[in-house]
Length: 473
Ligand SMILES: [Zn+2]
Image (cartoon, rainbow, N blue to C red; front, top):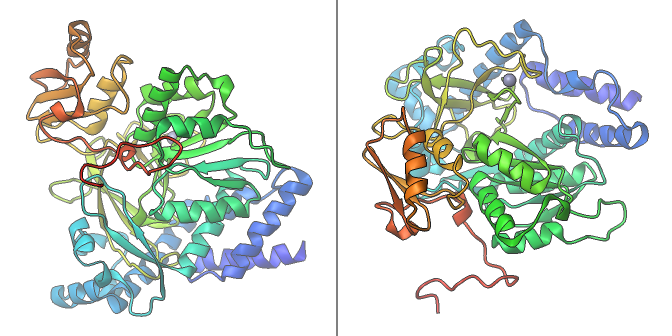
């Protein structure tokens, strides 16, 4: 085990200093861990400490050092920040986590408008990823081979250590193939020894067929065991499973990983019953990789501090959100992990609530900083995506994925049919929300404005013919 110990020292050194990792150290650690798991069945002592330190003082010191290096790189190497620091007369070396507010947050529009202005002069761009937002124009984010290899190895370590992924598992991705999460998942899952399936966001009926069909390959579970998707596509699968009479017995699923959209308790519970698998809720975004968050059983979103600086800022004033108040997640990924697209204080636009002062997490992830779960966006009248989805997904008669549009304080909902009893149930449950009325719409076309969900990013497949696009012939 000498090699392991030496490599762990190298890994620990990079973690401590905030300098770049030696990829072969991290990669060898993945192989060591896999061999250990396959030989002894468990990772052994000390494995928990390998991914992150639990000492708050040490963590504070690390954050300070990593942030300093990150700002130094961004100010010196990227056109956008070079110009920003010169124009505003701010000394990049003077910034600490306490004075970070002297750097203006970076809006999404800046990155979307000119992705190359955020790429380091020293970068070796290798892969262009697209975001899959539903607002129209995608944001393009360049990644290097270093970033992809490092993030894949780190994801493999996390999948084995905390995710329980083992060689007999079969992991299927039903997310958009243009995202960085797709590339990293394929590499990380195969590094653990598990198998990877590109399922894609295909027609839900075709996806259920694939999930249920036995695989018959040596060393693997008979059916797909892990499924990664967005919350709206999970909704589409639940709806199709209920319509087609599928039950949990038809599937071999163990865990379903949902991300990219607001997941409600109602949908999670319904999906767990339908598929007989645990549904996990996570937070990630192409631009801020490898910063990711995980929702604990107590319903907090925990965001580990070692891969980036995470702030919660008031959406209007951009000052730190007070305890109990709603704020936007603002993230600075550390340059230890990112050397291509450099971002400082990136405004994700995703709202969370800062935990109230009297709410101290007591869950198993309590040592990791937390916020509320993601609330989505907020309407002018102060209604969040989560408010609406909680209301609507609590009503099983409404079709999934949930589609709605807010017209001021009037909520339009796709219900598939006129149903006065359903409407009155919704009106009763909407008590307390700033709504003046609910209107049931028959089809998505009847909504006053389009409701795009990620399940709409459907990929064509010959398994089930998808109606041709208008004018496609
Ligand atoms: Zn928690």
